[in-house]
Image (cartoon, rainbow, N blue to C red; front, side, top):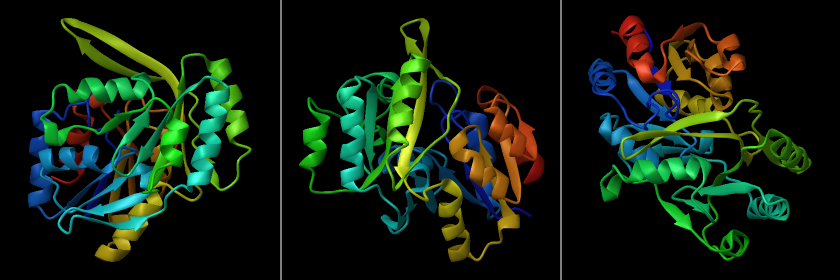
Amino acid sequence: MYKLVAIDLDGTMLNSYGEVTTKTKEVIKKCIDKGVYIILASGRPIDSIKSIAREIESQEYFIAGNGALVYDMKEDKIIYENYMKKEKVLEIIKICEENSIAYNVYTDRTIITSSLKFNVLYYYKENLKKEEDKKTNISIVENVYEYVKNMEEEKFLKITICDENSTIFNSIIKKVKEINEIDVLEVSHMSRKLIEQGTEQIPVEYFYTEITASDVDKWKAIEFLIKKLDINPEQVMAIGDNMNDKKMIENAGFGVAIKGSTPQVIAVAQYVTDTNNHDGVAKVLERYIL
């Protein structure tokens, strides 16, 4: 019997429009009623995940920033954290600015950016369909370097770097990898999402990577939680689609990849479920838990 299920959001539980289907909500509620911990494990900041957790009635814990923190919803506080140092954040920003490549800085509460492009554009469009208290916080500033430099609170979860051109993207990643005390996520494929523009569906496609402090990943955050909850790794199911899900999928008792996941994730998964647009999460939960 699986006692804890860790579920990624984008590309996994959320469909291409950033929604949780009615079917998925119904199945998750049945799992929770059965006593299973449903833990959202995402790269998003706190408030963005919290609104989705409430939507699916998961009221215990969630993992943010790819494992940089664990949040206790009942106590309304962070109970585990591993943040990036400000000097490392500024060093990466400087490289991005000097090479005119898009990037965003994620704190525990907001996404700092200079323009609405790539993944931030997707979150912005997602916000248009949400109530005010359920939106992902986006801070658009003129000078990100100066803004970050002058910040008093220093809870930096990660930095994302994005570009449509693979050559430009790879050259920047090579430079960033020379910085110590950080981890650079190996992502070799394009991210593809859909944005509704009136009656049109506009694809948003880009190469990207995610940069965190050293030793940050979703599985380490899960290990903290299962120790706290007295659960064995064999009693954990992990579901995801991308490289930031790889460690939790290969270390969990039952690792599940979404159909169409990056090949490295499929290679370590014990089971491949349907796509995020065809209730893949709901289908695997029905089969192996309900």
